[in-house]
Amino acid sequence: MSVDVRPSVVVRKPRAEVAAYMFDPANDLAWTGGITASRPDQPGPLVAGATVVRTAKFLGRTFDYGYVVTAHEPGRLVEMKVEKPFPMTVRYELQDVPDGTNVAIRATGAPGGFFAVAEPLMRWQVRRSIAADLGRLKRNVEAER
Image (cartoon, rainbow, N blue to C red; front, side):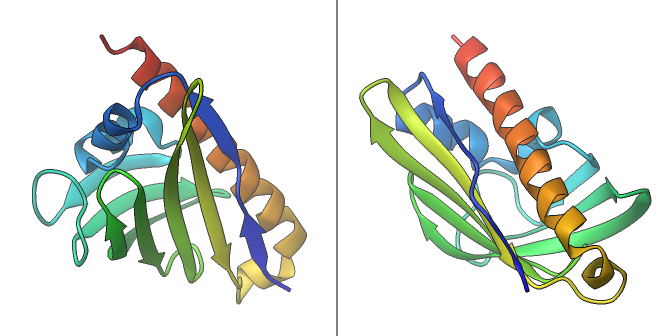
């Protein structure tokens, strides 16, 4: 079994504005829950090959994890590979819709070790966490002038 979730939300702003905010690690702490630090290897928006190290708290554990951007389409897509809390791929996907921008985050992976035992809980927790992140992203981007 594996985790495969894809929550989404419509942000009532143009795709370029959403991408500028979402794809810039300088904004991570403002909209990504569970992290206490985000340290990109270079300033500015994410591009292919970029790496970021985050400090996170997840299911009662605190740990550092890094991700590397494996795919990037400016203003549309960022795909990242992460190893913790378990190996997974995370994709930020943006699409124009009549009311603004549909923003989806897809997370896929196969929990191992401690997390394999709790896989149904993991799937629920990952979906819940991403949905909360999308809610914060929506509020923050829509509030910008």
